[in-house]
Image (tube, helix red, strand yellow):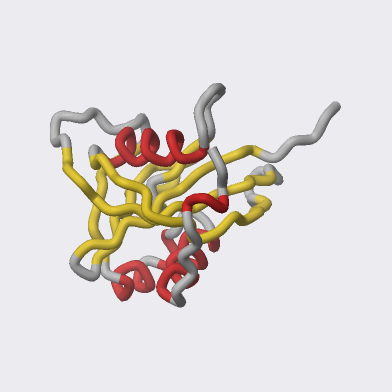
Length: 146
């Protein structure tokens, strides 16, 4: 059996001192996360981030940078995730866009509101990435390649 991490992407979008988050149900639990998801065959990491953000929030975004690339082993199932988190600007919202299965709603939260929901974040990486972004981690998109 070959081991391979799950390749995922996420997007940090901040506007008017609020972060775009998804409120979703995962394994019977309601949690908050950045717009995020798996890389599909044939797409680039950048394409996956743009697609996942639209599918989970209804927002079209323009990627502007990269916060980081992180490994996370989920305590719930032991799966290792290799996650690339992008920074993006919100361009437009399509309110008719159906949201992915499990997504309850897309919400804009302040950092303080996210901290207040710390026990309801999907993983510790959710807050860590926001803290990294707030600390100024912003690498050029070219570090990822195509």
